[in-house]
Image 1 (cartoon, protein in one colour):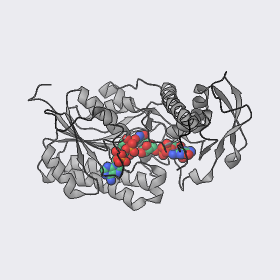
Image 2: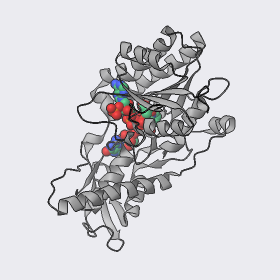
Image 3: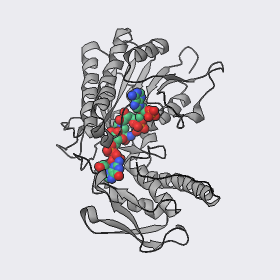
Image 4: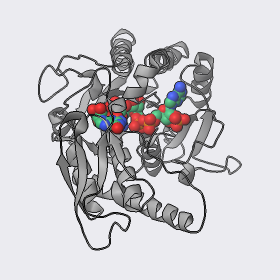
Length: 377
Ligand code: NDP
Ligand code: GDR
């Protein structure tokens, strides 16, 4: 891209899992990338520190702005300053279980936050220039009405998070139809990576089991391990977020792998990558995961017969989404998108990453440093 044609992107949620991969992806494509970060009492830019550029450097292509989706004037000012060609609205209170604890905040940020951005684009007269991507979600399908779920499947949200995202979905469609804005919903099924937040189920498992294998924790406490999900890799999914904004006409797309597994299966794979064979015994809240075999000296802190997985009812949700399975045919046919990383490969990558850090922590502990790595939050 030459200086004249260099595109400008603005990412809300740039400090999150997807935001960090998308920023890398767009920088590689030659974009100037602006991101909105929240003010926090501790540094919260760990996921993007490796691409951070000193603002004193001329021609820095990655710039961060303080902001919040709950603040209309802030969002309007940033949009006015940045004049983006593309806005990726990835910012959200994204944890389903937390949305039951903080429903009003979740609605404000996830639903009205989306409206604030769309309205700012319109208010500033950017609706012919700026393309808009909304991070919609398979949680919209909730109590599923059809399997597999595709773009035309009816929604039935099951959490304050999903209901807020339902508003965001429809207000995006509405601004497209009412004002001719190029606005798209990516209906993304669960996607994970070593950068996944530590309290989402896959990362909780890979991190928790790696810690247990290294003697840093004793047991992994889980909620509903019968839950079925269609898991992909975040790197594959951010590529699709960009592709959706490069079409002639704005459209909504389901992004998924088309394969589903349950949480118990993900626990077993993670254990295998740590050299452990797990046996599940019992039922419901009494079900436990027991170490049935250990490969060599791969898990120095464990012995056969140890119980390392237990069920804790505090991780059950007031209303659960039991099963999700996406049909990504439209994305494959219209955009040629296919996921490149399988869930098994992703699980291996996540375990390797978390084992490295568990080993580092174990070494620190051995030398007398007091560290807390608890998976319980
Ligand atoms: P993360 O939770 O990792 O990232 C969320 C981002 O939003 C973080 O940068 C966070 O900031 C920011 N954020 C939170 N609250 C606010 C706020 N009030 N104002 C501004 N920014 C805020 O989520 P993911 O990267 O996994 O997901 C990205 C988006 O895609 C989210 O909207 C999510 O709901 C949606 N989604 C995710 C899926 C998945 O499986 N990952 C599937 C489908 C949709 P901070 O770092 O300070 O917390
Ligand atoms: P989800 O992801 O709710 O699908 O939302 P999460 O990883 O939190 O849960 C997946 C399933 O695992 C079950 N589960 C547990 N979940 C967590 N977090 N912790 C546990 O201990 C546990 N035990 C069992 C859950 O009940 C659930 O069924 C994610 C988020 O990224 C959303 O932002 C996004 O929109 C959707 O994926 C698609």
